[in-house]
Figure 1 (cartoon, helix red, strand yellow):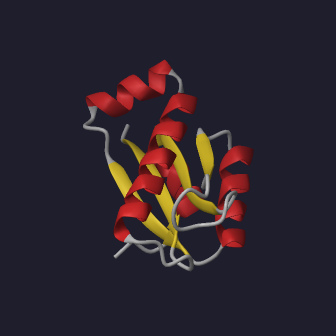
Figure 2: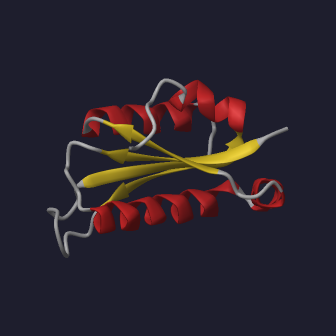
Figure 3: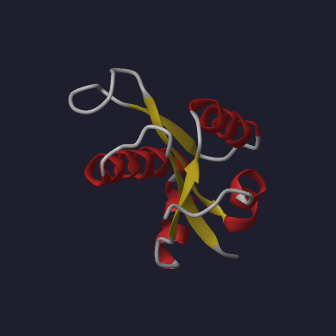
Amino acid sequence: MEYKQVIVLRTDLKMSIGKAAAQASHASLSSYKKAGKLLQDKWEREGAKKVVLKANSESELTDLFEKAKRRGLPCALIKDAGHTELEPGTITALGIGPENSEAIDKVTGNLPLLD
């Protein structure tokens, strides 16, 4: 079985590259912590695959979060603290997994890669 983690970033916020990288890191770590030891170990043994995708709006990101939660996937929605570029509480990113790749694809399979 193949495992991965998906990070989804909002592109409508026009975050700087550094800000986007920080938000993606928050999403990755937060979601990882929710996965549980068994999934963490399987994912790490396979090389800790990560895929970064894009969403166009807050509503798209929150819809994806709700779908992932309903499917029982480990996931974390990230809200910015507001110390630099964004207002406090701005939803910036979503982490899903690590989990079975097929299960994640049922939620995020139609999203484009971040370019």
